[in-house]
Length: 159
Image 1 (cartoon, rainbow, N blue to C red):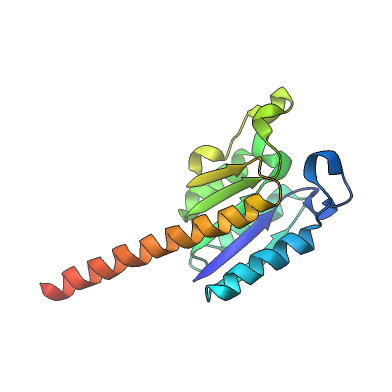
Image 2 (tube, rainbow, N blue to C red; image 1 turned 60 degrees about the horizontal axis):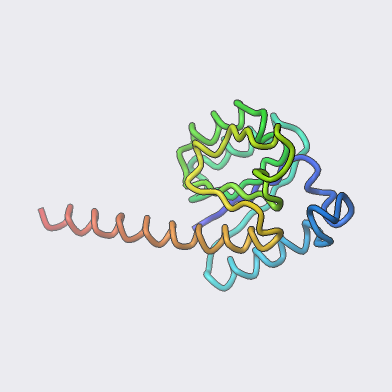
């Protein structure tokens, strides 16, 4: 099983930018913690970060047939990108969106969320711990998918 973690614009600046909102943790530290969870659960994990909308769309499309799930923090593109929304919808993979801050308690423009309706779930406002929560959620989803696949295989063999 493979999870792809896609990080949007300015997340490469975590630990530097607006620590009062995003905290002091750097993106590399978040990824190291996520990799530990993946390794403990014998899952492959890949990390990608871009400040460019088209590169994020390309990465989502590359997940089709190559990954079992996506964890995405589209950052500012959450509020504006129909292209990212359409890419998530097109690949039809379990997708969990993460936001470090509580976007619902921030500026009015951040309350518009273009991607949430096409995501399996959202983790919002838990700081960097939200990525750990997303990993646990994705592990649960993967477990449920495997159980359904096993039941379908068993039913097909019984015919």
